[in-house]
Length: 185
Image 1 (cartoon, rainbow, N blue to C red):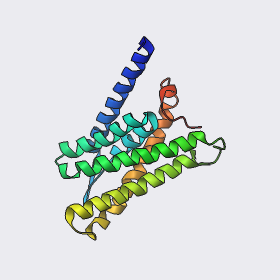
Image 2: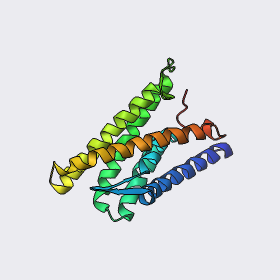
Image 3: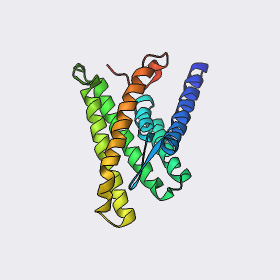
Image 4: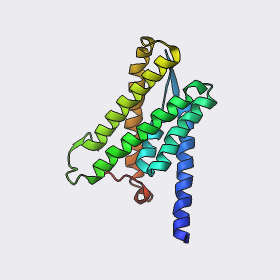
């Protein structure tokens, strides 16, 4: 391994750890209590991980970061669910981002975001809301009460997507942009 490869792998490791920690912090400390739990900014970091990191690193940062937040916040029962839901969320987003980068006809945008990327956000949101609905139904043994959380989970993912787009656009203007996994056209 030469010096450049070592620097790149070290930088990638540091960025992965940083996004993991920021996901934990964004979930634990930037939250709003609601009837069935709380909404938080952790999804912003999950989506950013999908945009900035290679798949294995993004999965680690997104799923472990939010899983740690559940454990450290006293919601350990949610940790395995969050781990799996966020893992799949990253995979969905990265497949959509790969499609967005492959498409040569990437001129179609919705609010400045390429259509395949926007579809990824929507599918990831539907997955997340559905995943937490199922988790809540299993945990509480009730399939009616979890419906109260659906609008809050949808709001949480929507806010996370908007913030992830804004932050990724700002980061795209920095010198680090060339090392990101996803490059918006």
